[in-house]
Amino acid sequence: MNIYKINDISELIKGNSYVGRGIVIGKTADSKHACVAYFIMGRSANSRNRVFKERGGSIYTEPFDASKVEDPSLIIYAALRSYQNKLIVTNGDQTDTVYDGLVAGLPFSEALKAREFEPDAPNLTPRISGMLTFEKGDFSYEMSILKSADALGTACNRYTFSYPSLPGLGHFIHTYVCDGNPIPTFQGEPERVAIPSDIDEFTNALWNSLDEDNKISLYVRYIDVDGVRYESRMINKNENN
Image 1: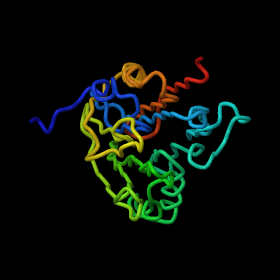
Image 2 (image 1 turned 90 degrees about the vertical axis):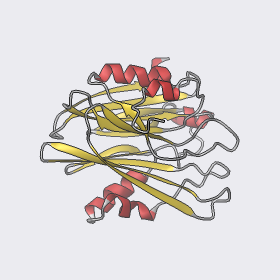
Image 3 (image 1 turned 120 degrees about the vertical axis):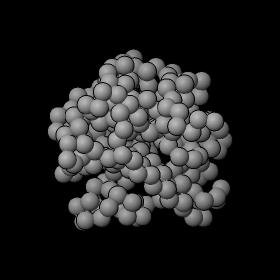
Image 4 (image 1 turned 30 degrees about the horizontal axis):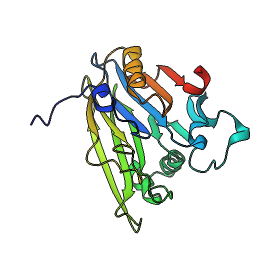
């Protein structure tokens, strides 16, 4: 078994109808950029009624058709925000929790101690989060998953992973293993994936691998390793149809 294998992200996703929401963070093969990607999927009409919007460099989930919103509590939030030399990406409103924690001087993992998995029994969807820190012309990153300790949601398990940036290597964490009822929660460490130098190559590979019926939106950002300039790609299925 090669524990250091770097996977093609397409191979990890293709044929899996529901990996839920996913975060990818890593460094491009040419060492010029940090990569961060976030996608959302959905099974219900409420979940599918969403698009990504960029405002002031931050990414938000918003209703595609506001008249059809049933419950906004777990589906409308800031997915990506920056604070000083840090870039935060999460699958829920804990983006704001991390941001407020940084403002108060708390590190990433400490800020997340105020949160736990989502209150959506029986699925008890985990909260996944990531943060890049840019300094001295390079970056490092952390990833977190908060998930239920049992099927009843009686306690929260907290896992934080810290990574240096290595050329061509990224890490991929998602909310679910696959579809189901209840939906089985992601297990183990974030998966090692290849990060190509070309943003369009990566964006297309990721989007085209997600299940056609359940995918909703994808955002990819490639940031210069100095943390200043970036380019991005955004795909919203609702706006493309």
